[in-house]
Length: 273
Ligand SMILES: C[S@@+](CC[C@H](N)C(=O)[O-])C[C@H]1O[C@@H](n2cnc3c(N)ncnc32)[C@H](O)[C@@H]1O
Figure 1 (cartoon, rainbow, N blue to C red):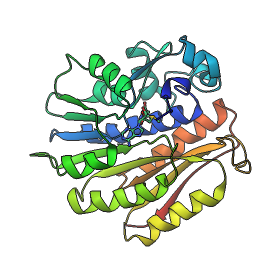
Figure 2 (cartoon, protein in one colour):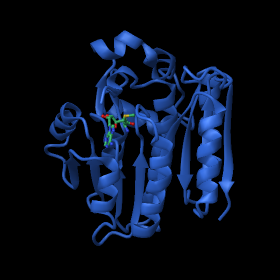
Figure 3 (cartoon, helix red, strand yellow):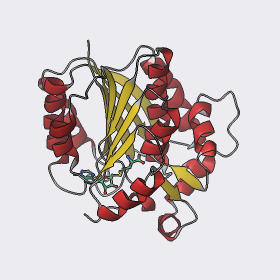
Figure 4 (cartoon, helix red, strand yellow):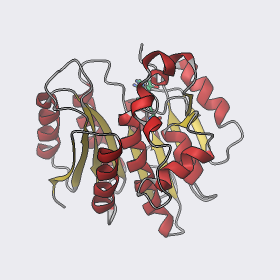
């Protein structure tokens, strides 16, 4: 396990994923019934963008670094407010911290992180946070062990693997089947890299052929996806998107496209309901 998210925190892909995540989580707050968030690849939860790792790549400069002057009425404001609340932009909040900041007393957050050091950092971050548990365990094994959740019917599962080992797209396709049999009502959000179109198309075809219904993809391309050695864009595949999410995702990606000077942004239905 060589991947460390500290080198990439706050880059364009994080901005896209985190703005969409906050929108997804916001849809659970309309009803008092509790919800659960399972963050299967959680990372450390918070990243120092002035730290050695972030400065080494400088990726955040073309991501969160460009959003310092966003107006309060921007569609990105709900996410950027949470970034500030967490100590950002210097201390940039990852997915579990954003989720934790949105949780109400009746809700629950479960985080899985396989890297022992990252898990220790995350555990320390949430040491005194109620309703939050941190596991050092494999994401895919966790789906089988932790689902369905006890006593909670509404839930979001975020899967954000590093794609450092071959076969990640296949494991994700299989994971969706596990979720379908164990927690069929969950909203599932899967982040994926867009380097070249071919593996992304194969993944989307496999999902469409798998029998899963109601699937949307949101993609932000910084460049045309021609160079397979570069992260040219990123996507979020969402199963059972909440009402109004597609419209909000379009607003969020359009704004990110403008501010980050991206090449293209699209929200499309992959499989209808
Ligand atoms: C892209 S980062 C996660 C970033 C985080 N979701 C966020 O948005 O702030 C991927 C994380 O998954 C961890 N990881 C890699 N393989 C894993 C596995 N099989 N199960 C659980 N965690 C894993 C890595 O150590 C890394 O911290």
